[in-house]
Image (cartoon, rainbow, N blue to C red; front, side, top):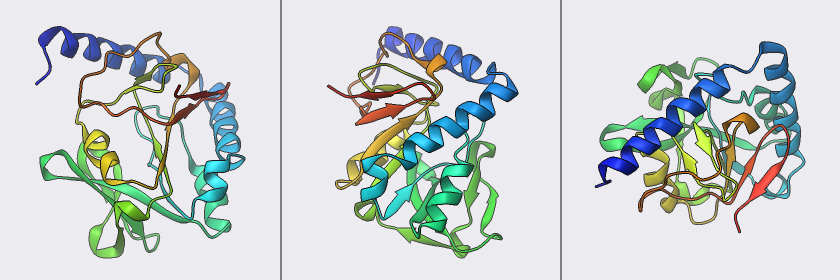
Length: 194
């Protein structure tokens, strides 16, 4: 259980990070999204991965539509998270354009009956949104802990946080159960965990 001060500070960083990403002007957002997608597509982690977990952008998150389109053309298996009870998560590969619905938190998610469940150990690359992050590749998520519970189940995956550089803070307030990532990519640069 987190102490009250840590919970307060994480909540403060979450609010500020969400406000920062939502304040990115539309034209700059589109250009930044393209730069992030290009950086991901040029990465060694992408080239090595056959199965990728990404996300459907919501609430001003970096939009990975261009990345998904190119990865699909290259024959990568693309799956997306689906929130489960108990703050658990599954990785599902949508099997067609009618495989989507509004899921938890009003986020687009695959429909289980029209998707294939991908075991966590099959994932080679996981792209993770955030509210805020720091140069040491720790993140503040949306507060549900879904990724923090899921990532330890993925022993072969490279974990990459995806954000706008304006979401960076000097140091994230992280608790004992918060999982650090291998790297972060923004429209400006890559950050790698020491």
